Length: 216
Image (cartoon, rainbow, N blue to C red; front, top):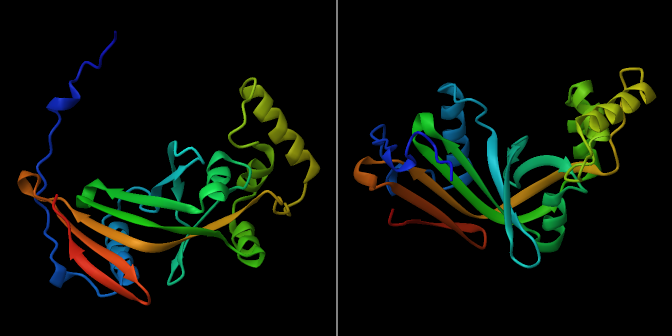
């Protein structure tokens, strides 16, 4: 069996940048998220809006992938995808998901869990028009999560779509749109020395949030 030249067990980082206490965080997890997100942007974290989205099929088999956060407000966190993809099929079946942001430059993670709903057509249309033209063409061309015979088949589909829409206007596909994760739980994780990390949680209780601490 081939193994990496570097033993993963030998890779260690001692986290020393910061601490996180219950008294440090905002009473509102959305404001706390915005604070940390802005700090990640200021620190020039590569793609700070990249997040791991975890879903599960009806049998409970999990899957995860990186998607990009495209909007956040008091209603939740929004991302966009093909409604025929694996993630979309699993969201239809289970209607719940978990999100993870990891910003190693700041030694921070944010975990968010909640129900997922589709965004309305007007919201999806508004975001679609902001996308680069080639990304719009790609959304039409890719049968996301389906098997392809080879790369050439995908590129041929792309060329066909581009030929059908020679101008600047590419309509939004009916199978493409947004989802909003509506959180009922947040966890803000700050790396600490000796693996005694700080984990501050928010648990939704009606219109309020209960703040607590978890053992690392």
